[in-house]
Length: 281
Image: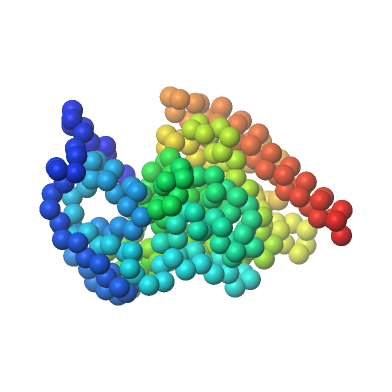
């Protein structure tokens, strides 16, 4: 992760070194521009100036605003594909997102401020690798696959790969793909931010079983993800979270307990929704 600037005086726009600005129209043109050393991709740019203040030095800034297809969203009945350039405001209200994962649409509408939501993108949120940004927590819970293209060709990575800096040099995030949604449910609890946020994805199978995939994060450190069979007690699932979840602000014991409580609320919500559906039939 990038370190914050340690200067006594915060940098301003005037201190940003000169760079070349490229405005490609296609993905291939963007990757070609981003292949050079010292390049950086930019689209919503809500996080860009913060990166400059923290020491980002780029000789080429590749604007993705005009690249065709990066804001597309689609659902084929199994996989939800969200283009990396989809802005928060549009993505949370897109019919494909609302239809495939209403819980994600509801959670997506809660993040950031109105001004940021009109510019910031899902790709920028994930690629920034900032603990206070929430899309990585949601995407990891959903088991999202991140589709990249680089000068060496395409590849698919997880959000953990991004946090562990495994993106190939010049890699451009094309889309966030969420698979196996035919029998999936998603819920998100952020009532304890900044201390804790919990995302849960339930995937049921035809035999009456399934899995619960839980991601827990805070504004202090990266998120952690655990998975358990459907029906496991929420407190038992939370107890498997690693000790690294604790810090000077809140102990691992406290965060595990809080995560279990919030997970229990989410699973109660799922049960209530199922009961309402059965009653309406």
